[in-house]
Length: 134
Image 1 (tube, rainbow, N blue to C red):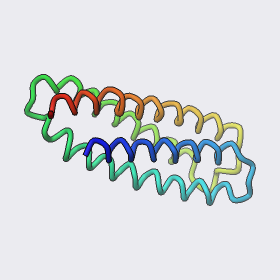
Image 2: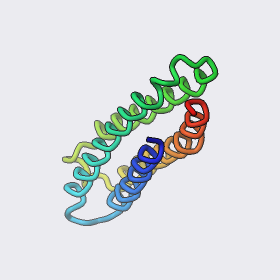
Image 3: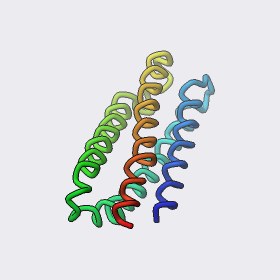
Image 4: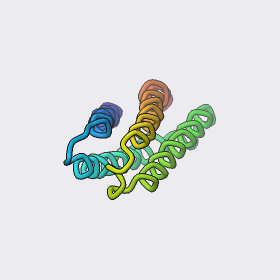
């Protein structure tokens, strides 16, 4: 279970790298490519969120020693979800080519936030959860 979750987080990192490259390109296919990558990211994010909630958070819920890390996981995950929702609402597909410098800046900020989130989940949360679940 933990290996599969980590693999999906690695895939999300790969998709983020592709999103970043696409955001910084001047390709005529940029908008279409970004929309496809956004969709893939959303699908994998939903999949891993469900897995983590059902297979990691649920078993930890009754463990008093897990409450701090669970709270932080949910807090950071909600922050990451809010950031991506705001970004996508601010930059619908129809606007992706209109202000390239502003889009790159917004995209780079989102990439940094999501990278930090993934690193914490994989490096801290999953390690703690694996130890606590046994």
